[in-house]
Length: 177
Image (cartoon, one colour):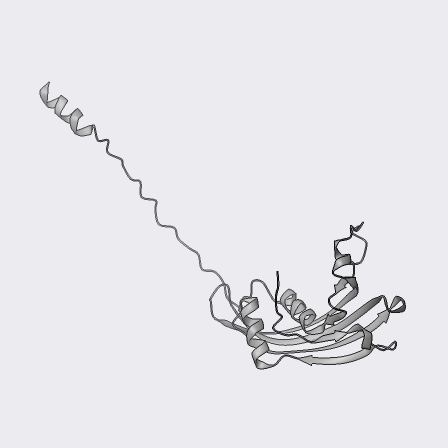
């Protein structure tokens, strides 16, 4: 799938100094609108993230530590009214290798850390990483405080009596007797 990120901030790994790099990324209004559409929510009002990129293992792996803060509006699953929420999440990811090395077979166990994400064109798209973590942090079933489902009373089931097409003939037979 070829997807153009709504919020893209690529960082070439070649320019990451050995001491690491700190950066802050903020989504512009158009990017916020695109993210809201992508996530199927009413609005993303703001999205800001502070990240640190650090080279590891002699520059073969890169660690990204970040914290994102966002204000979003979702729809309450009970009342269907708009519901404003604030998101504050921290995350860590490791990058290394390339998309081609992504096809290698890996031996994983539940105790292992996630394998490194592949580098795409020698870069890490910090904006897309932040967007993905915002999507993961969103409440899948947002509910306003105090909103409750009211008891639904089911209407009695209407039983439809089927009349046989031969019932009229049976009635005629009864009249003949």
